[in-house]
Length: 136
Ligand code: UDP
Ligand code: MG
Image (cartoon, rainbow, N blue to C red; front, side, top):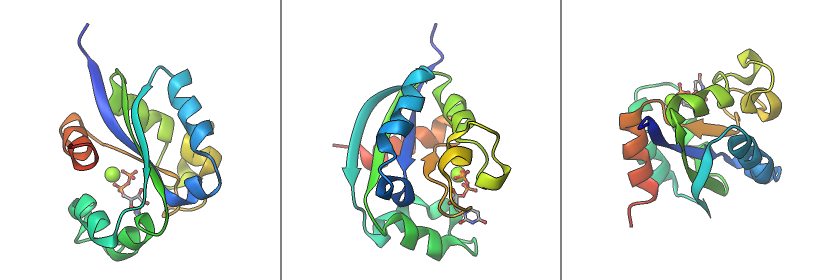
């Protein structure tokens, strides 16, 4: 069966800072998303601005880019059945207060900006985002 997909996941600075990376990876693996690649990096604000370009017209864009570049992050390629949607479900809603129980953002998110994880929102964007971080 070939709905095996790859998606990009990022553990954001708030969660890396609280040493939650291993626990979050375990949630992926327990739910049949294999962590194919993983690296801890610290990106510049310029790189964050490029990554989040789709949000450039939003009022939160500047803070968002400053935040993603404020400390180390863990970027991962997750692989599995319907991986894009499966990861979005495990993450929960953008605002941790609105996220369902047992989702990563409900368990670990602090606020709408410090919401612990990023996940690609479509197969097309997943390809672009994987390429952005793992292109060499
Ligand atoms: N964000 C924010 N304020 C908002 C909406 C979003 O700080 O009012 C941040 C939040 O960290 C979110 C990121 O911008 O994860 C990207 O927003 P998006 O709507 O794409 O949410 P996501 O796909 O991450 O759930
Ligand atoms: Mg998004």
